[in-house]
Image (cartoon, rainbow, N blue to C red; front, side, top):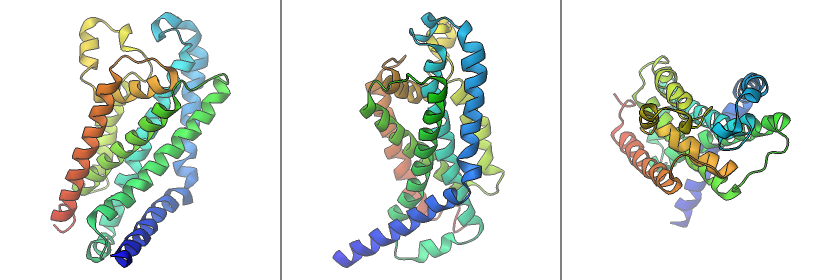
Length: 262
């Protein structure tokens, strides 16, 4: 049993380190673009538009300060998702996934290796964006570091799992861009990244409450700023619930070989 545990730890380390090296090797494509894009958001929305927005509509915070948690969460979500969906689909496309499946690695180890890669990229990009934000708002202080780190990790895990499921069902490279383009991006932009839902009329506020991204963004904003438009307990519970459900689904799909052996 001890020998098996050593083998599992070695295989997990090997797969996870491969995933991390994969995006670090092309850091100009994976780490630099989010920093540049977020800088543009801060310049356009924070510096140019922000001064015209009254603090009353952003819970008493300067607009650029209010934007920071939303922009960090946006990059964490998209990069965690993109890393896993592209990586796992690539091993499917190259048929190297078969080597993993016939190896003595348990399915949970394969899944965890890819998830670790997605989480590392998501968290690293989030840290980079936070460092960029300090150039535009140097006095920023995190209200609740523990909640902030918890939500950051849970969100990275959740969307890494979603990327994995997308990659399992994808039949072409076009399929791995459909969900991020037509589902994730609209939901993120309408999830309170740039505004508080208290600014909206009653009807649109009710519609926004059906958007799952709203709860992710606002829970992270509670950690960073100490303010939120939603229940933190409910949001954390739902994030954990979805992680458990998506993990179970991912392991089931791996066991069946869905999208892999077909």
